[in-house]
Image (cartoon, rainbow, N blue to C red; front, top):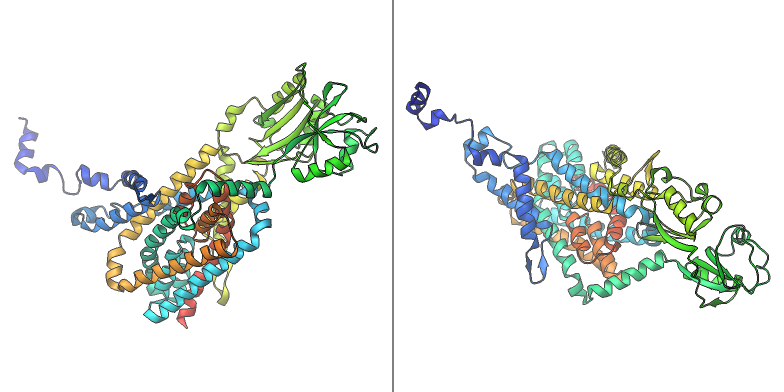
Length: 577
């Protein structure tokens, strides 16, 4: 044995390993990444377990994190003394999770956002007003009856309605009105949040049973509603018998704007040719038009009766292809600038984008991932495809620069002050700002010259990963103080949070299902939106593979989050009087 080894053995094991250097178990517990992904893994497993047909889903991560946060107090005191951040997550990591969740949701809902608001905007406002108003009045009543401190009551309100940006707003106003009680807001939030999250997740999963409505029936209704909002295009052949049309060119027919339709093929004396703007229409021609059903009713008056006539070209010269826009040179260009008829001898009859299908117009800006139905001579179709497609591997890549610029812009929007009564100010927060920016980007598709394109798989991954990161961080933070606060404030605080949650959820569902008669899937998504509950949206989207839930969530979320931020700050102000 060497001299150094003999000296180490004489000093004993404690001296050989300094006490300030923790062993492997302690080192693992001090690693935020180990804690984060262990909690996510165990929570995801727990959330997948089903009891009576119901599971926690992503909320399993929250409850595992709450348990771990609570158990932190039982760690050796010397470990916590040397490593105070043990079993905690940096706040920036939790905020990043929230951003990664809400940003893809906004991008997904953006293309349908304005059309949906034109149809249901007033309904969204009414649901949010009734639900949040009832919950706020309940909070005020319970706070006065149970003598709950104003800041604590504001925290209970934000936790019961699962709104983190509103919690930040309560903390800000408490700093001005009740500096000594700022921490009470987080305590109230941590007490009410778990019950609220669990209630929304379970209720969403139980809705089909409670309403006695099969999910398949709800899916069929949702698709019917989507078809009503954004009708599909259909191709129908018409025999030209109107003498007012004969002798006109296709361009003249479209310029008259009698119907909103595009024309793909013309059959004359058994020969099929692709339609071009300069093609002259004659009596007895058979013209194929592509339009929604309401326009087809007009086309019979404009052209003549529809006929069941095959319009395929037996020679194979005329063909129809679906071309995915994937060449960067075509991104952002107007369809008229590409001049498909003049430059390639083809006609674009329909465009599909993010699940929506519509008639093409010359001013339409082409976006990456658009699918164009193109009809024309085989050589012309191939040349047009070469100009706009042929690089579909690019569609698997996220346009990273505009993606992160959008998140940065959302952080700026979230920091902008919103004036409040009494000269006070509030903010949307990073999550609310990112969601608003994502809705705009999803609708317009670009930031300046940069096109924003995120593959569907990337959006789903970011959404799910962001959600579980946020739940892990929120659960760890709330779990550390849960038991101590309950002992201090008493069980009535838990009861108050539960009552506020049930009032908010109950009034929202009553409005959506009984007053407005919404579809089950729309109500499930909107419930997650009015409760600003990320796990609620996750549970709603798990019910069926449709966009109805995400669109309804996106419609309700901005109204609800702004209303909660405002109301949450009014509660301490009112109770102060």
